[in-house]
Length: 124
Image (tube, rainbow, N blue to C red; front, side, top):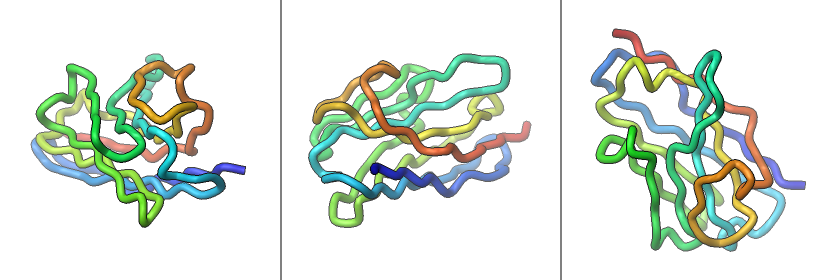
């Protein structure tokens, strides 16, 4: 059984930074792409960033490009999301997800395991 546990969320002022972590267990972490998604109140869950199995390829939503960086450490079975220059509209519950395959993808249907989420709140 795959388990994904996010951490690192919290309250931050606009312009600040946070780093989210997601620790994975249950199957060969290094074989699968990983992604971050977020869901704001009264909105659908949306794609944020994805990284391929070996970290060689990354992909970002336009809304976070240049501000967020996804990375992974396969030795630690962990994926990270570094978030800089945070804006109030980044406020959401952030979820990490493990892909069905090895390469970056941005659809919810491309991921078959999800964490419980971590709250990020950006105050203005």
